[in-house]
Length: 119
Image (cartoon, rainbow, N blue to C red; front, side, top):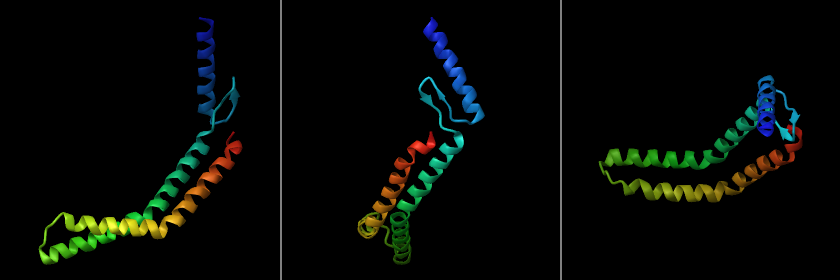
């Protein structure tokens, strides 16, 4: 019963600290402020968008061009768009792959090296 009361007390302390948006140490538990978490999530989403953009943009462009070609020639075959999109994605990954990997590694390195700064 005493352990349950201690756990509830720690939980209440953590809730109050989170509400104040401070990072504090309580019984070995570290809370990161919500501003830092929002910044990390924002960086994560922007990097994900930046890394995926070349492949997605090129396959979208090829799909649009093939669709216009299909409308003009009135050829409605589903497999006609599939092969060019796959080839475009492979070529885009081959061309932009090193850049994508460098960008991902830079983000991961920055994130891991800044872990002590978050606490």
